[in-house]
Length: 203
Image (cartoon, rainbow, N blue to C red; front, top):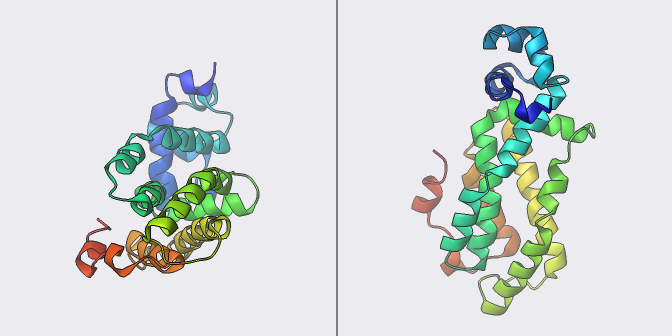
């Protein structure tokens, strides 16, 4: 039975997320998940082959929830805000997961076990096109090639998230990412967020 069709898959995943958020992926065992979820090990293994399989399920479920991102793109006032709506969705997932689980996922990425950056860079073509539009319209003042700016911005958001995890959510993640994005692209002053808008970004 494919794990996505297994009876207990959602329960196991939701339970695992709670434990991973609290203790970190590496410190949670299959037994811990089973005990917390109130299921047997055999039920777990009918749904998943192991903890890593649970992570894949969680990430697949997150990627499938694109409605918020698409609505943000449709409602955006300009192409920079459309780029931001994509980045904002990834940052919201980090907030939902919390610094411990997000940090564990980033560590798995560094170990070569995940493809988080691959999925982030998958939107680079969109970013390049939108960056060029912004440069033409004067929203972005940077004259650097869009092909360089787009990957720089996505890498920077990744590094801000990593720093946020290392500090145990020691600063407002989305606010900091927005400020750095505006600086990286050299967004024209009239298109930058006000302090009040920045303060409202993080829940």
